[in-house]
Picture 1 (cartoon, rainbow, N blue to C red):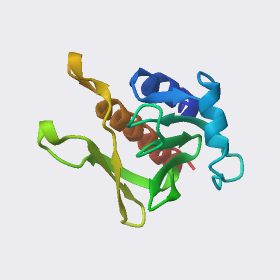
Picture 2 (cartoon, rainbow, N blue to C red; picture 1 turned 90 degrees about the vertical axis):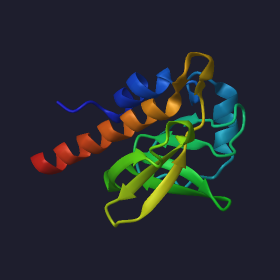
Picture 3 (tube, rainbow, N blue to C red; picture 1 turned 30 degrees about the vertical axis):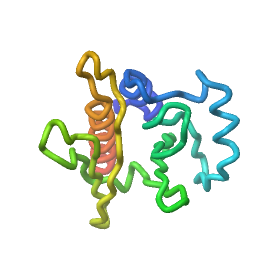
Length: 146
């Protein structure tokens, strides 16, 4: 059985320093409601990954259907079902702060993940990548079974 997206988010992203769920932060929910996102039918906003604490600059909104990233003052949706691959944008360890997601249509999207517990040498990007890889794998399994 393939785990739900909610379960994947809870088990993976909650371990990162930059991720907040709407359940855990009511002021965050109020500020996100004002964004006027074009959520798809059945889509729920679950949380936000903040690259800068208490700021939506470079933030990633996480829903049960995909991610929203801010590009040129517009929130752009990226559906999990359209993701083909995800990987680190750079192989140089000190430079790792971006992920590249390749979509089914061949388009590449850069996602910035800056946070972590640097005093312990832990970076959020590894957990975020793990989350995306698992979700992509889940969708591949669903396609194969369907």
